[in-house]
Image (cartoon, rainbow, N blue to C red; front, side, top):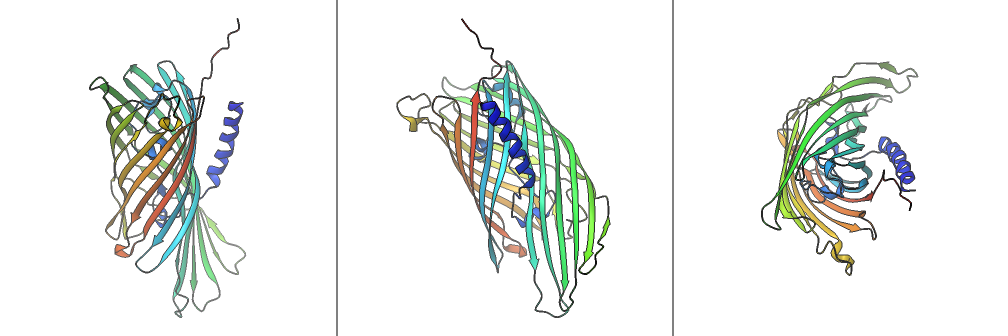
Length: 409
C-alpha cells in the first residue's frame, strides 16, 4: 500500500513542480532565478548543517550519506512563504506555496542509492515602472516565471563503518519565460516582448563523510562535497507584438549557454549521536556565466557565492517509551549568504534564522518535520529592494524495509 502511495505522490508532485511559481523575489530576474536550498527540511532547520551519517534521515546534499541508510526512506517536503518587499519609498507583500523536494533512498549492504526530484531555482517577479502621468514618457512592466528543476541519481559506498564516499549524477532542465511591456503615454498601442528559454544540462557531484569518537560519548562528524562546473544549453524563442497587429514577429535568437560554476561544501560538528549535535557548514562557489540577452543589465555583475552556517539538534530522550515529548527532535540554526549577485555595486546578502522540530510517528522510524525560517535578503540602499521573509515548511520522512523476502514456517 505504501508503495502505491509513494508512486502516486511522485507523479502528482512532478506535475506540480513544473506548474508552480516558487518565488516572488525581484532578484529572480537575474541569472537562473532565485536559487533554492537543495536539501531536506531536517538540514534546512539547522541552517543547512548536514554533517552526521544519519541512518533514518536522507541527506541529499552529500551522496556519501546514502551508504549509511538502514531502511528504505521516502521523503517529501513543501513550503508556504510570505515576504514583505520594500524600497526606500514603497512596500508590497507576496505569498507562495512551493514543492521543495521528493527523494527515495535505498540501503544495499555497504552500498546505498538515492534518486529524486528537486527544484534548483525559481523565477517569479513583477516589476512596474509607471510614468503615465508624464506626457511622452514610457511606462514599462517586467514579469517572469519558470525555473530549473533537477532529477538525480546517486550511489554511496561504506569504505569503513565510519567512512563513506558517494557520487551523484543530475539532469537539470526547465523553462524561463520573461515578458516586457512598454507603453508610451498618449499613444494607444503598446509593445510586448516575450522570451521563452528552455534550459538543460548534465551535472555531477562527489562527496565523502567521516566520523570518529573523541571520547566515550562524544563524536566528531565531518562532511565534504564537490559539485563540478556544468553548462546549461539554452534554446530561446522570442516573440514581439504590437497592439492591433494580428501577426506577432517570432524568431529564434539562440540564447547564450549558461555556465554553472563548481561548488565546494565543507561541514564539521561534534555531538552525541541521537542526543545532540552542534555543527557548522561553509560553502564556496566560483564565478559563473548567468547572463543572457534578456536578463542582462549594465549595473549588474556576478561574484563568488559564499555561505556560512551554524546549527544543531537536541533530543531529550530518543529511546523513551513513557514520554512521547522526550523523543521529539528540536532543531535550530543561523545562516549568512552572499548569493553571488552585485547590483549598483551592492553585494546582495541573505541572512536568516531557522527553527524546527521532528515529531516521530508511533510504531515506526518515520517522522513528521516542521520548520520556520526568518530572514532578510537585499537592502533598501543603492535604490534596491529589501525582502523580509518568513517560510513555514513541512516534510514527511517514511521509513520501511523493502526487498525482504517473507518467510513462512
